[in-house]
Length: 299
Ligand SMILES: [Zn+2]
View: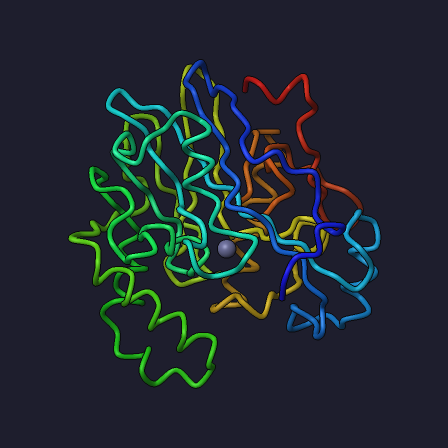
């Protein structure tokens, strides 16, 4: 599962912008391009998925996945939302530390980390290759419902799905090395101007984040909507990776309805880099309209 460079998208790795005057940076952890051997959607065929992807620049028969972490300046260092795949998962990912360095953010400048959910592409960057904490000064917070599900339930050992069992083992490995992860609930303010929004389904405790600064609003969607060309266009499609599929569909429809109604700017973790844009209703579903170059520097 390596990335053929010819299939990679144009992704410069970092994108600086401001939200209501507050500095922010999208940091790409890299990307993966791989042949689609089976439908990634429980209720759509490989042919239907291929037809939806045909309108993108992704080579036929392939999937491309981006990983867009976000850093926001606070009064006291930087808040990082999600941490990428870490150093060892795929040859084409694990670029977050280099991207932070390029943005002038040292590991010790990251004073808070908010995790959307405990899948490996969001938490593995919490550790270095030596399995030490990658951000020694950071207060780490995650959804309380994720902590309850992944770190305290016995389900992991009994999970029949090997991918799910692997994700349990991985979450426990990562958080064993982290001194403390504090739980947050819906509506909690992570740092001033960054509020947790419960968006369950992809995982039981999945959280999005609303950033409110100077009259601007940005919704950090996380994985509540994965690739928009699939799941915004077809809100009822159920990704195999969603743990609670009907709940994930309800969550996705709520986000799509709200964001298309008020036109707020969103950022998606797996959206085409840098992932910033608006969701608009389109036919039976919705469409992601990336911000233009002119719009992208400030929102
Ligand atoms: Zn993800």
